[in-house]
Length: 173
Image 1 (tube, one colour):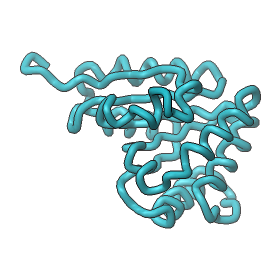
Image 2 (cartoon, rainbow, N blue to C red; image 1 turned 90 degrees about the horizontal axis):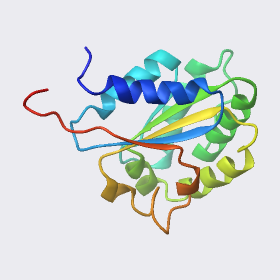
Image 3 (cartoon, rainbow, N blue to C red; image 1 turned 135 degrees about the vertical axis):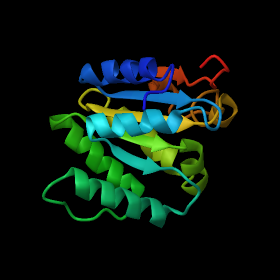
């Protein structure tokens, strides 16, 4: 199924991925606007690591990412014990081979693991010249992004390459 207006967003992200450089894209829009469709297409087309940011504790997120890493890297490396360790592995592997990770509902992940933006900022800064990791963050709206991704309090805002809005469907759509 192809949703109206989503192909352009997917193509924009794919163009950025094709550059072979580290990038951080933000996809936002209201609930039920098609963000998960965009995420599913990127995961399918790029064999991306998918992390659901739903409200959970870090151990749930670590279990999710261990499953994703096991499916992505064959033979499987040792299981990771933290999100920080998982992202170190993703950044390190992206130096040799481009990698893509989609974090659906990034604000919920930050609520569950408040130190994550600090670790992500440090990794983005450390690997800015060598990484080919493409990170796509999903959020419901700009108000959720304030202080997390945009604004004076943002730790990772300077690294964002592109903001893409998924607009709600109209009656014409």
